[in-house]
Every structure is written in C-alpha cells, then in structure tokens.
Length: 441
Ligand SMILES: Cc1cc2nc3c(=O)[nH]c(=O)nc-3n(C[C@H](O)[C@H](O)[C@H](O)COP(=O)(O)OP(=O)(O)OC[C@H]3O[C@@H](n4cnc5c(N)ncnc54)[C@H](O)[C@@H]3O)c2cc1C
Image 1 (cartoon, helix red, strand yellow):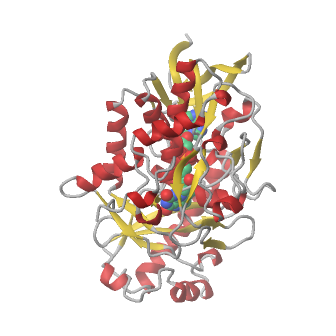
Image 2: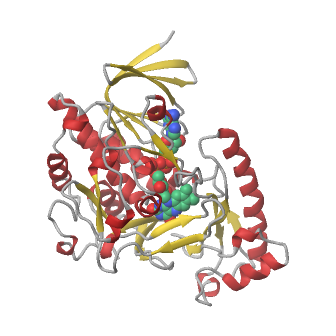
Image 3: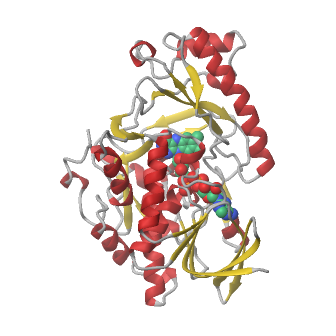
C-alpha cells in the first residue's frame, strides 16, 4: 500500500545545503522532513571523506550560523575534532579540517535535536503541481512508493531533478553543457608531514611531471592536490579528476567512479614508490563514489554575476559572506584555476534572490543549484556557503508558510534579520570586521 507522509517543509537532499535547510526551517518552527537518497548526511562531503570546509572564514572571520555552530562544537571537543587552518593552496583562506565520522555524527545529532525527521535511502521522484504549488512529492524507499504531502519544498539535491520536472528552467554547467570535472578522493595514512611537505610545493609539480612522463600517472594529474588531513600524518588527496562526466547520469557516474578508482590506486602506488614521506604509507578512505561539483543551475529571480562578486557586492538581501576564489575544475578541456575573485581583505555576500524560482510559489533551492554565472558559481559553491544558503532557504520556507505567502512575495529583509538573530555574520549591515576573534586556533 502506498504510504502518505506529511511535512510542513520537505527538504530534498541531505548534503551540506540540505543539512542547513532542515535546521533553518526547524529553528523557525516548521515540521521538517529531509529525504536523502544515500545512507549518510553530507552529500559531496560524505562522498569525499576528509574534504575540508573551505570558505567559512572570509577575511579570517567565521560566517557563523549553522556552520559556526557545527565547527565551534567540533573544535571545542576534548580532544578537538576539528581545527581551523590556513589553506596551503593559493587564494584559499582559512579552512576547517575535521574528523569525518565525528562531523557526520555531530550533523545527525543536530538534526535529531532540532526534531528533523530524516529519511535515508529514500528517493524523491516527481512533483505534483496544483495552482502553481508543489502539493505532493512522489518518493520511494525499500518498502515501495511513498507520497510526501507538503507545504513547502526546498530542493537541495545538487542536481535539481525534481525542480526540472516541475518546469523550473535551468542551465547546465557553463551554459554550453561543459560541467566541472568530477573527483574521487582518498587519504594516505602514515605519511609523516615533516617529510611529505618538506619541499614546500603544495602541488608536487616536479614529482607529478615525472609520473606523467613515465606513463604512470594520467596527464590530468599535473598538479597533485595533497593536503594535511585532520589526523597527524594523514594526507588528503583531492587530485583524481575525471572530465566530461554528466553527474545526472547514474551510469556515467558509476563508470567515472570505477575509472577514478583505477587512477587513485595508480596514484597511491606512485606516491609510495616515488614521493618522499610516503614509503610506509597506505591508502585509506577512498570515496564511495565520485564527488560531482556541477550539473544544473536553476533559474531564479536573480542570477549571481561574477562582476558583482569581484566588486565586493553586499546587497540588502545578502545571506552569507564569501571570499572564495574562482575554483574552476576542468570544464571541457580547460585547466584548473583558482584565481582570486575579490580584492584581498574584502568579501561579497550572496543574494537570497538567487534561490527563489520565478514561478512556483512554494519552492526554494539552495547549494550547488544556486543561480549563478559560471565564474560566480565556481566561487560560491563551498560547503560553508551551501550550509548557509540552506539555512536561509529553510528560514524563508517556514516564514512563507507561516505568513501564507508565495516565496516570491517574502520580505528578504526579514530573512536576513532572522539569519542575523541566529548568529550569521557579515550580512545586513553587520560588517565581518566586527568579529575579529573567531578563529578556533
Ligand atoms: C570533488 C569536490 C571537491 C570539493 N572541494 C571542496 C572543498 O575543499 N571545500 C569546500 O568547502 N567545498 C568543496 N567542494 C564544493 C562542495 O563540496 C559542494 O559544492 C557542496 O558540497 C554541495 O552541496 P549541496 O548540498 O548543494 O549538494 P550535494 O553535496 O551534491 O548534496 C546533494 C544531496 O542530495 C541527494 N539527492 C540527490 N537527488 C536526490 C533525490 N532525488 N532524492 C533524495 N536525495 C537526493 C544526494 O544523494 C546528495 O546527498 C568540492 C566539491 C567536489 C565535488
């Protein structure tokens, strides 16, 4: 028999955006259900275990909110379960490295304490639309089909299948169909940092060049992104990128994952045999699937433009601060770049309008679905920003429901004020500079 389940706010996708959205909506009094297709919260964070939260400290100050609460909690644990460090890569500022399993546990616990009903291994399918509202969402879990009756929907699925089915226009990748490369990550254990990082080149270009010349490494491995992991003498490897994969095609993702495994094992062997410090290391925490950076970007009432970000725009409906570089990864046959987008010491804020569709009255979206041009997208997509976008969408969804308004008629100033009340910093006239002492280390 088909099951019917009711929610005020239905969040599709339990990645970093969905995590923020569920907490934001619950904090504003809504009954929230979160549907996640896999067995874990985190999305890309769970697919690439150990990947640092970048971008949470624009100009060295925490963005606060849900991200701040999670980070502060992990950093304050004894012994600490997270640490704020300066990235070793060009133009990236501070990042949070953390114990992956402890972070996932803390995230589940925050959802639990907020009263969010989490449905794991559950897929959202087609929306049913009446009078310009999504009234129901078809779903499925191992027991069979389900129907979610809902007041509001927040699409945090990264790929936006549901929104696309609901008729929300979208662009794919750079607008010509070129999506950023997907990546399979892994870690190395027992790799003494004092030996591995003794030479000071964060990209290990000399070693990589030799490996490629000898035919031992794929040519796309010209820069090895190797970083200190959270635990001593562990090294996180975010290097094996596969081009031209459509992240909305499950078979394409499965093939890319197997190709990624091949290249990760080759690279691990190469590190052990050829790179100082890795002689006694071994591979650990190979991702269960490739991390997908970019697929659909949904059309909203406003599209974020890189030019505005470069000028340090802080619009009245800015919901999160950011100074991340243009972190562009191998779209089409392009190289990897991470050029600065905003002047050093400055930051921009992301407008709420970029998460509001033009037509559907009870739909919002957040995270990597945000409406942005390709260069702007490459800067705004960090996990802390996704959590904050989600938090804003969650608060806004609960507000729209309580006020009986379509999301398009909401007062963005009220959303910004509610975020500020919850400790989100650098928005609504509150300069980040007012929060000088925020680094946990
Ligand atoms: C390889 C890689 C490296 C990166 N490096 C960094 C970094 O170092 N630091 C940083 O801060 N950011 C980094 N990013 C960017 C950041 O990780 C992503 O932009 C962010 O995690 C996106 O979050 P999201 O919640 O929008 O989407 P996702 O993380 O993609 O989450 C979407 C979730 O929705 C679920 N879902 C999808 N469809 C359905 C459905 N129909 N029903 C139910 N569930 C569904 C998925 O299973 C998934 O859990 C990286 C991204 C990648 C891919």
